[in-house]
Length: 334
Image (cartoon, rainbow, N blue to C red):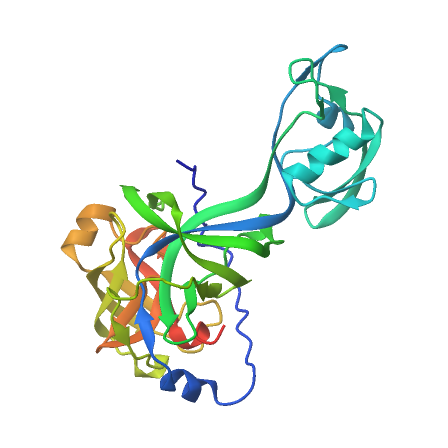
C-alpha cells in the first residue's frame, strides 16, 4: 500500500501553447477514447524536499546537524559541494563521500538559492552519516484520465496544474502512471474539500508521462493497454456548450468509471484560469457518495450532446456540489 498525496486543485495558471496550424481542425479529425478512470501518478520533485527534521543519536550525543545549520522544513536540497542531487540515493552517496566532513549544501527556499554549511554525524544504530532530515524525492497523487487519442495513444488528464507554488519544479523523467483503485471517499463539506482515497496497483502500469503544465499531465498509454471497455467519442468546441444537462464520467469506487448527471450553469470561453464551465452536480447517487466534486475527480470528462466538451478542474469550497471545468480544446494536442 502506498500512501497517496492528493493533488491540490488550486493556484492554476494557463499554459496552453499553440503549435501552429489549424489545431481545432486536426483535433476534430481525430477520434478519442473517453476516459473517467482514476490513475496514480509519480513525478520527480527535481530535488530532495525536506518534510521534517529529526535528531540523530551519535557518539557525541543526540543532535540534529540540519537544524543546527539552519535547514528548514520545506527547503529543497539541490546540490552538495556543487554536485547536483536529485534523489535520496544521491544524498546518501554525497554523505558517504564526505565521511563526516563539513559540506556546502545548496538549497532552494521560496524561489531563492541558499547555501549552508552542514557537518554530518555517524548514526550509532545504522553506522551511516546523517544530517537529521526526513526527505522525499518524488510527488505522488491521483487524478482522472480525460481522454486517450486513438492511434497515437496520447492521453490527457487532470485539466489543471499538477502542483502548487511550493512544488514549482517537477521533472517528468522516469515518471509512471498506474491504474488506481478507489477504496474510500472523504465527502466534501461546505468549507472543506473532500477527496478520493485510492491504492496504486503497481503491477498495472498503464502509461508514461512526458509533459506537465498548467492544463494537466500528458503522455502515452503503454503498449497492450485494453481499450475494449472505453467508448470512442468526438470532441466539440467550447462554443457548442450550452446551459443545461451534461454528464461527467468519474470513478469513485473501484476501477470502473460511471456516468453522473450534472448541470452546466455557465459557459465562459474567455476565462484564462481553466474555469470555462461552471457545473452543478445533480446526480443523487454521486451526491450521496461524495457530496459532489472532490479532489481526485479532476480530469473527469464532461460530455454534452454525446460529445466531449471539457474536464472537471475545481470544486467550490463553499459548495461542494458546484465546480469548474476546462474546455477540452485547451487540453487536446499536448
